Image (cartoon, rainbow, N blue to C red):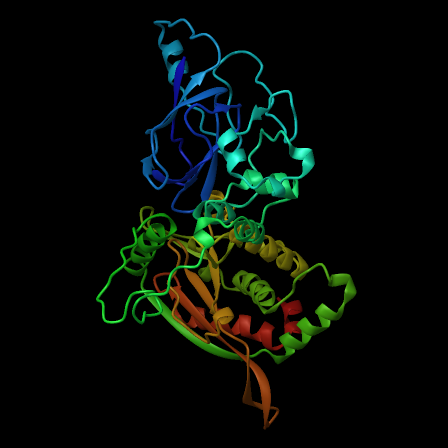
Length: 452
């Protein structure tokens, strides 16, 4: 029978998603829970598993197309007999029910036991690879042991790498056959494209006239139009809503962080801590978590509907991360409970997940305070905009050696500027200054953290 799969509710109030790429095509056999496509919401790239076992009949959307939640996405020719229809409301509701547990698959439409998904290299449920792809591939890149390639699971790679391979016209299955079961990297894709002479890697002919850095011939009045969608669209809406809802105030403080930098050097030299990446941002994050315990107004939410200020007795710390998809702010849950090494590990994991494009919508929701590290770009200070629902955000500037008064003399010290934006409905100027001073005290004298 033909069964339609509609775009499920992806959570967090998201109403639509863009199809990044299809991993199946009409006529392809699919197994239960096999990944069908990658879709990009306003917050993350999500992999959609198949709720059915059968054959792909129709794709209702093209790559790059935006689909509303509940709209038809893909149709299957499902394995098994079409069940007898019942006139009872309960049976009709059961027939219309759609699985929506994104990332974990769903119950099969039939009552039988679901078939296991084929494993790489297995033969019981393997499907022969596309003959045209194999003919077009250079035979010298395939090891002798892969004379009869099979496909069960898609090659292991991250969304940015898959997008890069798609731009170059490279089939990741052929790379996987060459390198084995490890995760395919961007370097693997580039090396394969260069070796096989992919069309996208050939040098472009020299322009007939001098060109500007963006490739437009000098003197031409050209424009590039970029669709507003995905993370950029969500960020724009959130920032406008925040800027015109919460009255922003920003205050600055330049801090002597020489003692903190010396502490970091000592910790890096400790072999027992070599597995933990402890840097200035880690110490700032720990200081913020401690300071929020003494300044609860910076860890609160303005509830307009209830007419209440909600103070949180936990710290869900947002860390702004620049990715290929745009700026996202994943959350470190219960940051106040983490030690310095625990904070370092959480930041490392958060950064790796964000760069790999694997941050889920749930990991981007519900922060109580945020940090943005503008120092990595060599910037000293700024006026960051609050994430909606939060009462404070701290911008961390670059660490610079500067002449500074120290113990009555001028000395070269390592300095950092902190920029705190806060919602003036919840936070008075004095409260904001006290919080910033608490963070600065810890950075100037890390031992003061023992007093918090």
